[in-house]
Image (tube, one colour):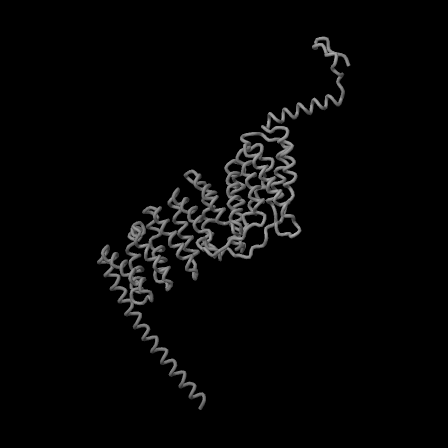
Length: 452
């Protein structure tokens, strides 16, 4: 093979080019190019592939035949892999690394979860005695979540889009059923970062979360532990909605958030749900009418804990609404609060009475004063005369004094009408008893005639 005449003269010691030397040269060129493109040295590149290959093997942590030393070795290798990936910022990692890396992540995370033995209805966020079930493989899982989070945060969306698709998102959502709160916290961070970065996938991700909620509400899935975590993600999403709200977002409020007040397990996620609802009403106060009517429609009949929570939520909603909404809601709201203050459960009754300390609630009641006062006065007098709890009777007296000071004439008028109503009711009761007495006598006479 000759040398081109315009080329530098070849060294006498230089060997003629062979296929092997050309391949070696091309390999060295690709290695140097890859190193400059990904910020990885050749040794780090090979080390990453070796670590990923080893960490793709999963341990159950429940099989007695598994070697503890090998499990510890995998944890060390995951830690090493995380330390290599940590400095990665705004780089474009090659498919030769990302493809096996995401395969390893999916092999470790996307696993069948053990069946849950705890209904969400039995979980209270304030229950100090409740012990959450820990994921057995958490020593490995938390490192894998950290690796995934680093990739999502530091790599560009166009690089990640090939690996984080709809299938990946749905599998992440399925893991929210984990009973380990540490895993759900990690999932929450990852899912929210993906939502923030992948603008084109946001609609799908919202719909996927809505499907989980609807299945929980109407599908009888009372063992889903991640409803509160998903609502927390939604809280940050709603916070970014612009005003006026899109019709799609209003439908989400009416068809998903409001019905979430119905399930028995409300106390496990009520704080996050109330925050989401409050943000909607804060952005568009007129939506408060829809929410309050929905909450009243799903009001519990025998669950006192839910009643206490819902009374507090209604009080917060009232603070964010205006005069027009007050005129619409004054009577139905005060009817429900009056029913609650007449409850034989002292906690429900006291919580309903404390609502009258809220200036905004009192202002709302005054908007429908002619319709509201007769209902409220009847409930107050019923408590004072017959409630078993001394503290409830005392609180009722305090509220009565406040209302009498505000509208003495109207309160007196309502008392007079109540006395007249009670008098008529007593007369009707006497007549009813007399009528039944006559019917019983006639029945006995007929029986006597029949026997004779």
